[in-house]
Image (cartoon, rainbow, N blue to C red; front, side, top):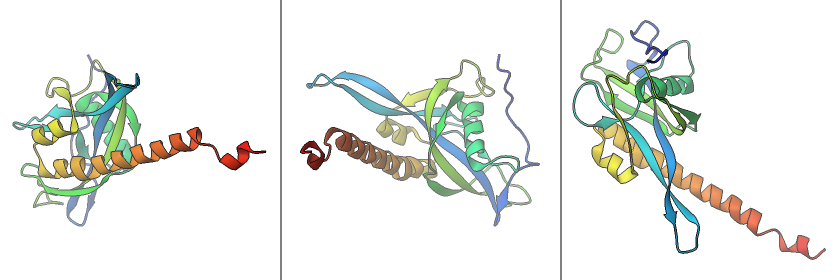
Length: 190
């Protein structure tokens, strides 16, 4: 049984300009697919999705950003509470606006929300977590996740935010590797 307890209620919820502020993440990991023709292992990225408590389809962990935490802390907390994963949070992918059909209150009567989404490199999958009785988690390729994703704004976070961020990371890593492999030729001549 999990010693962790999910937060509930709205008494510490943050709001801005009639929008409930939300923090979420796209948990990801690398999976080796086997050796390629060069004998090197190829890696693919997979993202973790969770079932919803209110209907069909899969989503990414997200929830209210509260007054006693940073937006990054809120995203990490939601990953633990809803998906049972811990890891390293990365740079913000962007802010995504959506309208909640079920979460309307006096500070956001129309149910408007603004979500900050982050990539989260998963380091540990917990055996027990607060919402494990209400949610199932599963790993998917990005194309699979796009098809399975319940909300359009989350698809945008995956396709536009995460995919762009991931491509930039791969280019940056490749440049670093090339720099280490190809030292300045003038230094070799001395």
